[in-house]
Image 1 (cartoon, rainbow, N blue to C red):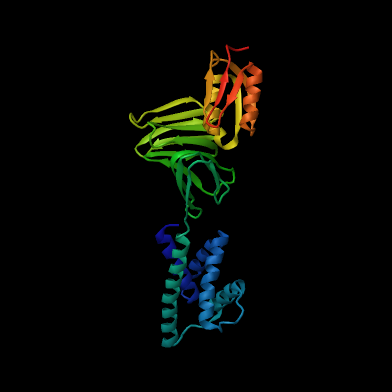
Image 2: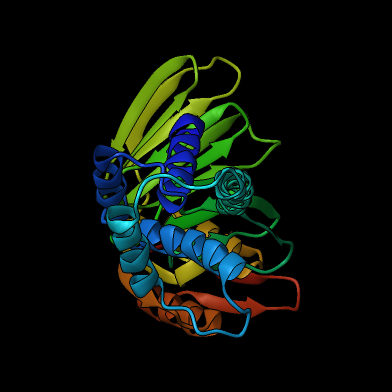
Length: 324
């Protein structure tokens, strides 16, 4: 609702309660009141303000009955009132408009703000509409959430997996410096570390749009990755890595993948270097891991490919002369 519309409604309610509404205005207010529970409550609050000006404070108040009583009084009261009553109505109207303005101000200030950061551990946060935000290590985010304005903004520095439910309450955006990533109902990962020259947006399900305020950008569907080059300002498309969110889920899926790639991803997620010795980097592996301990994963890899394993507190080494 615009500020003008808010003022019009305030004025209309004040006129209604102080018997100044025309039949057409009464109908207009009744229609507005019936549009939502929020409108119904707002009118009830206004009636309560007026009722408490006339009745004892401890008297029970029934907003539905008050609506009927005030409506009936408008229809039945005779014309010709004293100057004092007119003056009281005018003052009451001014007070009511001031009170309604305060109520609207309270409703306008409905935004919530959250600040999250992760240093050495992945942090998973659940937002008010059940959207989840998984922050990878060395990442920060500021979230502004406002259901009344239908706005949800995630300002991100680092990497995060965003999972938005179908029953979301706001339209979500991720902002990375000048870049805007707009959700169209989805789960997506944003990698945007400050010291990196590019921003990567990988879509796991649904669709997103990435753009700048002065540029249309591109749309990205499930299984695709959008890349934004900070230096050139160019957008590119690529295939998304299906394990891009493994830092949060610990789920890995490999189809004929090289051991070099597998070792690099495991090292990043489990935060320990995995060193390959011998002619084994190109060994291919098809395997799935789901929330398993790293020792178990290394054991499966070594047994499958016939490799030797040596471990220290600082690293894990896989060695062999070649692939099976």
